[in-house]
Length: 465
Ligand code: SAM
Ligand code: SF4
Image (cartoon, rainbow, N blue to C red; front, side, top):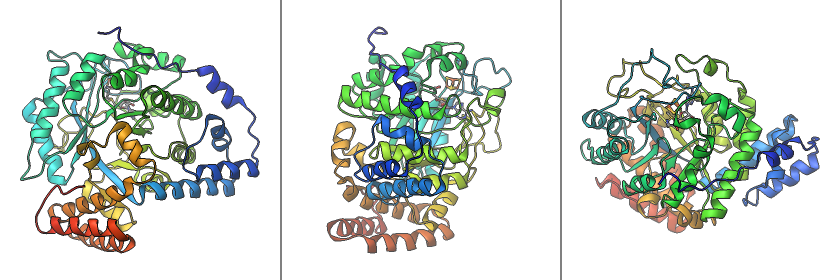
């Protein structure tokens, strides 16, 4: 049913017009925008360019403070943890920035079989992960989508002791509506796909071969996924291909389109920056590399513009960038990642990676760092399993009620991590954080959290509300 698609009418001209509008640094206007952002109802297109153009250190400081405040109101100090699971680096596309592209003949190729996938999952479970994103190149091996569906089943079925993966998100090439339905039936969490760049001409230059060269096919992917009933979708752009300000506005347009058309915007937005990839000169010097200073701005503005949408940062970034990004708005991070199929089982084998990582720390080190800096690492997968997805999640999230669930769930999963996986140093830091977090809570939520944590301490697992 290839023809069954819905275009997302991206209006490049209106984005360019908004970006071309004069943006003198007017402190009064900026403070009006920041006051509007504190109402936590999001920002409009025309609000973004003045914020994107900010240079004045004091005003920038106010922007970052506002983003931090909004983040704290909605997400508290919780950070959701996940890991990528690369199952295949076989690919028929030619994306100039990626090591998996078809013309990279030097790259060792590997498609994990189901036993190898189970072995990878076992390693991730041993570290303490509960939530994965399954990643693959776009190739047409014999089994096609069937291979991915078997892989998802293998992940859910894998056990390490009594541990299991509770949510599998997927980041695979886009499908037609019928195949998206099959993906939904496999009980995936979020379907993630990055447009890479929303700028049509640049897209054409960067994707020169294969199915992915079709800009419109990619642009309509999330609409097809939602038509198929997948209501948690994750969008994003690969920052560095084109002007980040254009991408940001286009992401906003995309989010708004999904909300208007399907009654629910994206569950998450990812903000990957291009990292050096083997055999890709373009990835060494991206055409529109985003500086750390602009990256901070970009995250803070997104936080204000779409306050209730999860923001994801991966281990592409260095630890110091990640720490700052957490303050500014990131709500989910990966940890202990490998970007080569089989990389968890055979740590020594680093051939076949998609790109080099900025953060090489294992999960325990990241959890330790988070706990020491006052962030609660959360392994919670409750919403998805309680049916709080799509518009239902947004209905709960918008009035801020989700806090009543998320905080107790985060603490219960942290207690699980402490009992089953933490090193002594992480255990000490996490214990202190847990006590302080409970003390900070009041009323019903505190009683609920204390009860759930106590059940975990007594040996119960997968306690959630
Ligand atoms: N093959 C599918 C696709 O391209 O949509 C899904 C998996 S692909 C491995 C996942 C993402 O990796 C891509 O969407 C792209 O944004 C990102 N990526 C590719 N090369 C990268 C690089 N050099 N640095 C950072 N991210 C990269
Ligand atoms: Fe293949 Fe995806 Fe890499 Fe492009 S980004 S070469 S489609 S794996």
